[in-house]
Figure 1 (cartoon, one colour):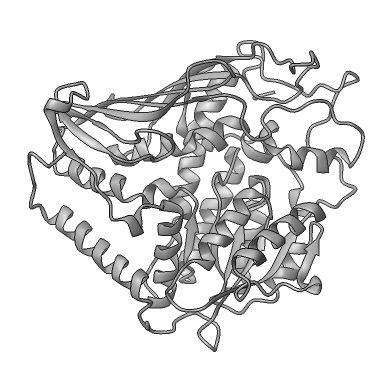
Figure 2 (cartoon, one colour):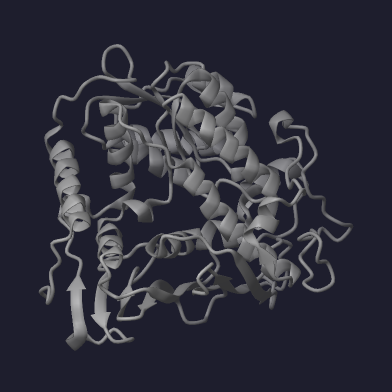
Length: 463
């Protein structure tokens, strides 16, 4: 499909030009000034949190071609996860993974031991459950380290406020920090954002974002078997517990929420929502004991009265819908066609995606089609050239907006973003002092079940 209309706006030309520069640097591995990297121009990296997402993030780091990068240490609370991650990474990047046994750290203090091996300007990757994010980030700031941290970043108001203050400290120290909201680095969405700002579909009035699929990740958990500790069980099953992940809502739905708000250049001011638990039984008839709802529907309202409707579902056998739409006063757009940021993005005249009324459809060069690679190229490029780069405050706000929708559904109360941010309940108190023997932040009852939200009955807290 060819473009029917083309704009020559400065925004779009700037986006295209910076995209060309990023591509050229990535492809040619040009020598760039060594700023904030180790003395031999090698950027050293440590991985803290060795699950699937951590392993993927480390792999994306190793693929960056803007100078040498090496993984030199790993840390986790689970030996099996660390070893599986190490084996996979060593097989893919044998010359870049240099993590002997004495640099493989198991335990809650492993993050300190790993980061102590880095020099200012190196990179620490944080891919543990979100409750530990502020603890690890504080240590990195004190050591002058650049950071890549996975989303979401927070699940409660006090921790969100704490992370915003840490973000300011990291900016003041000129640290480069990437946040794993990779939709912001998806080239089709970047181009769509530029076109929307140029007025191609008019003012955005309403948006619709969906992630409806089957059971995902660790969001459905059976009773704690008694070993290992209840705390370690909850960390391994982190999607099941609000303190550890914000539940399935934050971890699964944040991408489509974030890129929708980006397209509107605004964050919602309030939310009202609904949701519920339905079957909650395994195929064998055993109860699931997690804290999640099976379905969610949130109406976010913006200051100008615009709306974002978010529908989420984790139920097998139902229709799978995973995309986003934007409706403007002059037309509409498809943001993500399938997935968190699935290309191609496109715009249309009218209010439905009629192919005969298409204005534009993205066509991204092959080398820039992976947004996970793009975000690492962008981060390392900023480190090498010493240009400002810090995504933390935006990442915290996206996490808080996600938590706002989740809490509105879990309480049945219409809530403003300010009310959420100024709430006082901390979901993981004392997380910076956790040991292998620490009690879990939530405790199972005599039937092995955990506290669940009860909208309308419990309204001053989530559970």
